[in-house]
Length: 213
Image (tube, rainbow, N blue to C red; front, side):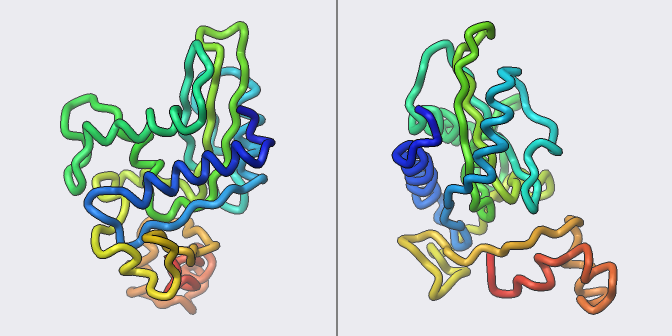
């Protein structure tokens, strides 16, 4: 299960990408995921603490902050099984609506298929003194689950509709390498333009990634 092994990394990335390719309705802006050793290192540091709880945001930063999915079990599960468990929350989710019943947990599913989370790193720890002996952690960068758009974790439309010329079997391969500091950068660009110092500094994704996802 160790994610230091290339075969485990490949399993994790391929499982995520298979699930991302198959979303319903189809996605026009779904990025292809890739393994990041730097992201995996953060996931490993946290998994080894055996807290069975979410990490503080400061502990899952690279050049951007990252999202996090956790899975805990008394027994060892394969990585694809753990990832499928997160995805299966889709049964309580409707695109455009969000959770379909009160109190339903859907955040693991939405993070897994969040359109612009394209770097992933995961780790599992054996925790003999904890209630659950196996603690799985995946970090996703940039993070998903923006509360403003939780019901629409991607844009629906023709596969790769938003990334012509940058497509691998339904997944986009042109990620934006920057992250905006504010959620309203689109409005700020319209109001002030990207040469305005604050917009230039705080909205690099909006300003520099005009064709990237």
